[in-house]
Every structure is written in structure tokens, then in C-alpha cells.
Image (cartoon, rainbow, N blue to C red; front, top):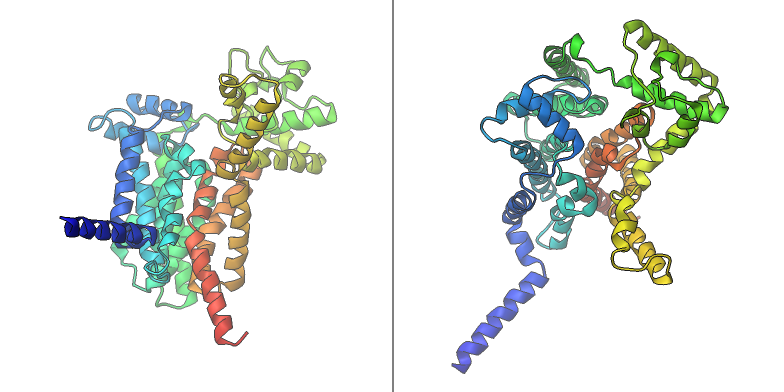
Length: 463
């Protein structure tokens, strides 16, 4: 009996030791990924509904689409609804894309990282969907997530073929192109990130050909995706169903510059009866256009005719030419909220006041601690700094390392999105740069591999 107890204690000690050493983390890495996928589906099923997805769901039910939200997601939703009513079908698609991307990152990185010796590096992959900064949007049904995770899956697959040096068949290339068409069609800003991925895809399809042929192949794939998206948009949202929501961006810019210069730059046909200089000033938010266009008494309305829309564009363009520095100042301020804002922070006082008396030293200390944790786990400031480092590493070493090229393939689209948001966004909220955050987080293992490769070369050279 005593011998049996000792044997079980010994076996238990060995099992505990293997867990501490991360042995099981390596042995069951694919099973762990599958369990995390099922766990995330079960916990958040059928996905949290937000105003944007509710509006798209309403379009999916009727089959009538407009382009305020690109119609592709609602169109697919419309045809999935009879099979799986509600939000579950869209949530399943976005989570499948996410874990498909993680699967290919794992397959790729184990080609150059010895996870058996360094199993704890797997946490950089396994914890990615559960990092609060990512989970806050992953748990919601969002077009941003569909765009982000479809691109993540394609980029991760391309990374695998880049490292493995395995030919990319036309069949798999076709599947990746379909994923890119979907991911680009669900989010307007995605089209500006697309060329990096499609050129990368083209270079792998024609990897055994000369540079001109590879470039031509990538360019043809890029044009094919753009043409497909254009055709889809024309089919789903004919001219009579176009919302022309771009006007709100221009009006938002004109409002900011009006307040800076003291001049009323808003065209009369874009003003509602509720418009006044006082309301323009009192409602202004440097990171959000919503107070101007939503609610019972909106201040702005879109131009109803083509002539009015052209006039608005002309007024906006001439204003930017006259006040370029004011425009840049306002635009960069707006963009900064994407990186420094903490999702849910506006509810902090309401939540804390339930447990602690406000205006006390203890309340102030607790609030300060929560803010600090919020910046670490929820804001995108720190990960953006890492992204800049990864981008520079990729640019410096792209001629000498496949890993550097992969790093560029992940980070360059991330910062292209930031650049386009700087001039085209009508709100500075972290959700808009969610794609950038995910792509940078997905680059950690590639950056570690590249740094190890650089150090190895220096050691071999006796440096």
C-alpha cells in the first residue's frame, strides 16, 4: 500500500514537473489551440451584438443593402440566416478565420523556433485571442474582425509557404484570393492594405520565375481582387442605395477648422435647422463625429444632389489648402485616440462608485491603478511601439532574411491602415486600428526568430 502511494506521488510529481517545464505545452500544442477555439466559441456564443452589426443584421434580414456598411457581410449573412438564424453564423466565421491564422502561425514558427526547448514562447500565440486588448473586440460580431482575421489567415498561410519554400498551388492561391475578396469587401479601409498581401501572394505563386514575372503576377492578382470588389459593390448597392457617408468625414474636418479659425465653413445645404455656432462648439469632440450626426437633433445632413456633393468636396479641398497645418494638427489628434483610448473607460467612474465613495484618496488610488492596467492591457500604445520596431527590423533585413520579409508582410499593412485612417476616419476609436494591433501581436514570434537569426550570424562571424 505504502509503495503504491509513493508510486502515485512520484508520478504526480513528474506530471507536475512536466507541466512546470512546459513539456505538455509543446506536446499538445495543436490540441490546446483546438480547445481554445471551442472554449472561445462556447463562452461568447453567438457573439456580442453591437450597433454596427445590428444594423448589418437588419439589412441581412431584408436583403436590402446600402454602402454605409459595405454590403458583403450582410449579403453573406442573408444567405446563412435560414441555416443558422441570428448572430452565430457570423461569429463562427470570424473565430474560424482567427484560429485558422493562429494554426498557420504555429506551423510556420515551429520551422525556425525549437518549441520543445522553449515551450513558453507558445504563450505568445495561445494568449493572443485572450489578450484583453484583442478579446474586447473578438468577442463581438464586427466587420472589423472579419476583415482583420481573414487577412491574418491569408498572411499566416503566405508566411508558411515563404519559410517552407513549398510551391503555392493555383488551387490554394484561389482560396486565398476568395478570402481576400471577402475580407476587403467587408471593410472600406481594407482596400488600402490589400496590395501588400496580394503582391506577396503573387510572388509566391510565381516564385520560380524572374522578378518581373512575379511582380506582374502580384499586380494581376491585386487588380483581380479590386475588380471583384468593385463588381460586388455595384451589384449589391446600386447608385440609388449609396449612402455617400464620406460627406460626414469632410464635414467633421470643416467643423474642426471652423472652430480653430472662427469662420463658419459648413455649406448651408449641409446644415440642419438645429445647426448653430454655439451647438457646433459645444458638441465638438476631437475623436468622434457622432454628436453632430446622430440623435434627435443632428447638426449635419448629407448633400442630397450630386452638385451639392461636388460643392462640399470643393469647399473641403480649398479649406485644406488654406489651412494645412490646422488640418494635420486636428487629424493627428484624432488619430492619437486610437492608440491611447481605453475601451470601456467612460464607465469606470460609474462602476467604481458602486464599491467606493467618490472623491476620497482610496478612490483616486484605485482609479489610478485601474487606468494603469487599462493602458497596459487595453490601449494600443505599447503594442504600436513594438510594431514600429518590427517594421524597421523588416525594412533593414528584408534582403537578407525570409523572416524579415514576413515581418514586413504583417506590419506594413498594419501601418498602411494607420496612415489612411489619419485622413479618412471620422472617429478616433481603438476599434478602427484593431487590425493593426492584431497583426503586430501576430508578429511577435517572427520578430523573435529574426533577432535570434541576426545574433546567430554575428556569433558565426565572430562579432
